[in-house]
Length: 169
Image (cartoon, rainbow, N blue to C red; front, side):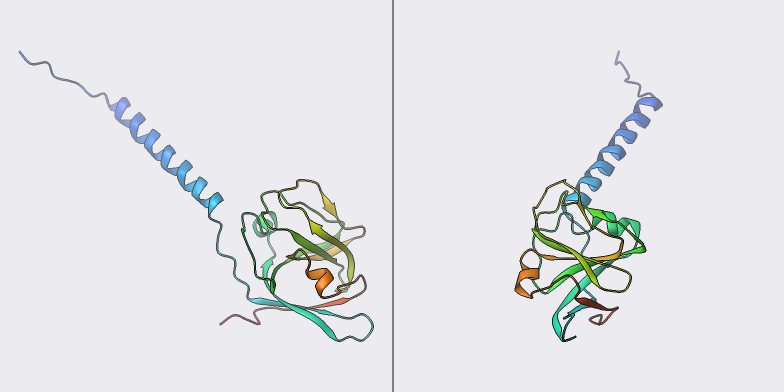
């Protein structure tokens, strides 16, 4: 006489639940390793405080919501020198940023509500979790590749012009 193996419904449900949990963890891991594509549609120009001449223009991605501001340039492995990320914090306040999960060195330009540069953090170290804070209230920040502040002689007092969707096709 043959024995019949009985599958209990609870074992099947447990297996299916375990498989779904495993797949969702894998998707989450892939999301962390392969970040969303960053679109550099907007323009930030930096203008001399003295002559008002344009010193530099960057094609930037806009971080204007909590999710985008928290993620920033995390997991980005490289970025062209003409690119950056422009943060809009919506309110004027002292802002602290960090380099957690950021693989590229950055210069961080802090900008007040009058679009004037008020503080600069040069050569932020990749993966460093130390806070980098503005010394006075700001509404915006610009992250660009390390060395760009020096290359374009960006200084406290320079003014910023932001143009939304300038490069969007």
